[in-house]
Amino acid sequence: MNFIVISIKKYFFTIVFLIFTISLIMFSNNNLIAAQNGLNLWATKVLPSLFPFFIATELLCQTNFTYILGKLLNKFMRPIFNVPGESAIAIILGTISGYPVGAKVVCNLKNQKIISKIEAERLIAYTNNSGPLFILGTVGIALFGNKKIGFILLISHILASIVVGYCFSFWKKDKFDINYNETKFNSKSIPIKISDIGEILGTSIKKSISTILSIGGFIVLFSVILSILETSGILTLIANTLNNLFGISQNISLALITGIIELTNGVNIAAILPDVYHNTSILLTSFLLGFGGISVLLQVYSIIAKENISIKPYFYGKTLQGIFSFIFTFIFLNI
Figure 1 (cartoon, one colour):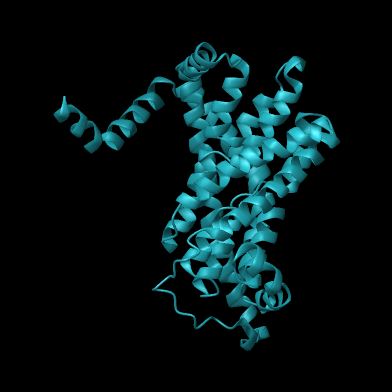
Figure 2: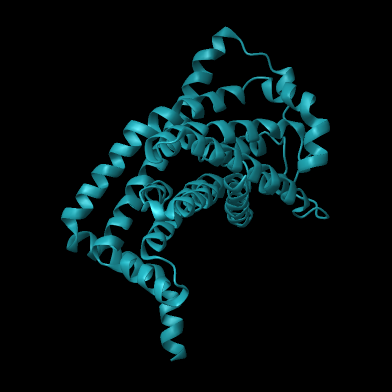
């Protein structure tokens, strides 16, 4: 028995990838449609909304904007979030632009030695958020057909992010990054010349293309994974198990499981729950928006892994944000 357990651990990912490959062949028709839908989602929704923000982020990091922002906000950022004032750019862009822009900004700040690895871990926990356009437009108006619900979800989402940010101000508070060199990149002293614009713009576009293509790959992949789980009946089996063990409705269980795997599909299922579950669907959506899903987690991980930033604070932070979003939404609905 011990030999079998050790063998499974040793070849776990080999087995998983082999099952995935076989499933691609077995459910090829449904997988093809899912891949097309995922690609369409990326091309029509994600690419137009995120790609300009990635370029803007890269360009801003080449200017003295971060320095100016840090000078203005340092007296607020350090006491509340225990990070330098320059980190405000990660919070602002991570809130208004959507997943996973915050992770990209945090990595840029660490590259420029504006923040240490520990400070990057604090920031990564709460600077990757669902954008206002997605929450208000897609979720509030398009899915729920109610702008007020969209505002409730957005306010809950932002408040939860702030609370998590304060909680993570205590993350490794007594520890110091021994590899951190406090000689910071000083963007104030580097003027941008007209002759440099072409090179800066070209570099920013190349980096942004690499990131947006990676995100597109994750969206298509997880669309196919969800298709396999649904076609094979695994999603229904898990939903029925939760129903039998905890008395959770099959519809709610299906929305929760799907949303934990991939946010957009989960929110879509939650929004079309029967009217009897109206408040429950809003609360469930709020939690899923805060948590973000495994798909987004892996997108963030693909960005921060290059900078040797741990994914643990992100996972803890997003779980907390999902819970706090749920609580704030519950309070607002009752008010």
